[in-house]
Image 1 (cartoon, helix red, strand yellow):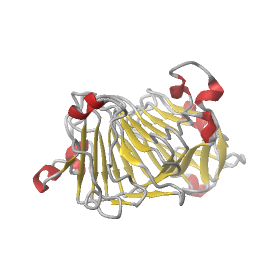
Image 2: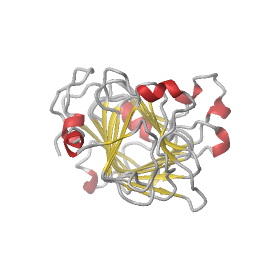
Image 3: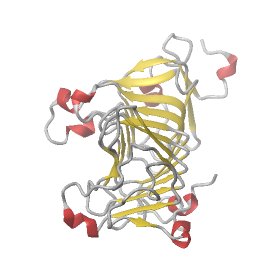
Amino acid sequence: MRSTEDDSYDYVVDQEGGGDYESVQAAIDGAKAFPSERVTIFVKEGVYDEKVEVHSWNTDVDLIGESETGTVITSDDGFEAIGRGRNSTFFTYTLKVCGDGFYARNLTVENSAGPESGQAVALHVEADRAVFEDCRLLGNQDTLYTGGGGARQYFDGCRIEGTTDFVFGGATAVFENCVLHSKADSYVTAASTPQYEPFGFVFRDCALTADPDVSEVYLGRPWRDHAHVAFICSRLGSHVHPAGWHNWSRPEAESTVTYVEYENRGPGSSAVGDRVAWAEELTPTEAEKYRVENVLSGESTRGASREWFVR
């Protein structure tokens, strides 16, 4: 039976039986479709070994963990294990979010498949107006997939760990006060920004860190020709390659990508690096366009409210 302190939530998940449901998926499946008011789900501490999907009809869901490190949603699906062919990356998620207006706080989403499993997504987000605060996203290759052209997503105070392309996809996504931790010499981002979108990935006031034996990490490479990535006012560790960016062995992409930096600091910043000629250092006027409110509150091809993002 749930305690009185849990009464502020619509549903409580407790694998020990002290809530409304014992699994996260059961709580989501039990929620009203297209609710008129937000649905709040509180997840008590525990390791929830399950693949979870927030369906497109599960709009306006809050998923709140009891603690960032103690509430863990985990699975171990990987590309090699599933073997569903060329596109099996997109079946490997631990948590998949398709319902617009999603909000998550204080939890860990992990794909525990080892690096030998290849692509293994922890968090797969296709939702528009999705917000993640104080979450840990843990994996190796392809940890975080930000999908959906026109989708707008915001990550604040999150820790994201991985090896190769561990932030990838075509959404417009802002990362503030986040830690991006590289576990191997490889690439942080692989953006596939659609040509018609004015912004892709924007990292502000973030910290790029790495395991002790990691020394050559690129900020990004273009998954698609119009990849758009900005690092602004962030601290870049010595593991960041002086060139900064990689063309993925496609020189033709150098004229179509947008890779920019502004007032970064640290031993891996452009101030001390020898950046590729086709990346840019923004002017103060240009950097002003990358204000969070401007990036996220702009017109969306998904047709949602223009001014949804309010700090």
